[in-house]
Length: 108
Image (cartoon, rainbow, N blue to C red; front, side):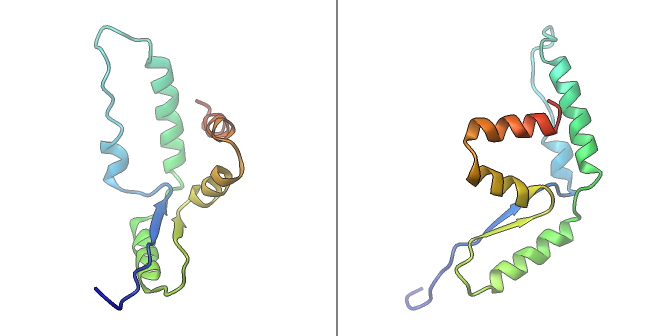
């Protein structure tokens, strides 16, 4: 609409207790190939452990309302652990370091 300034707002969630967590972890792999089983077992264990401290969806909803009503030029709204830390790291270190740190922290 002419005359109305639009500001882009990004809600960047970390670990949130939603059904997405379960439905997004369905893996497709060849039935006769177990090459990924060890990795998938480690990933599943890390994901289950991480989700113990996940935020409730209401926190994301409150952040959306806050962002929608914020007239500042702030663009990014991380919500839920470990989103703020990961976003900061992503800006500060090269991608190779970032992904190595993530794999190390989740033991995968």
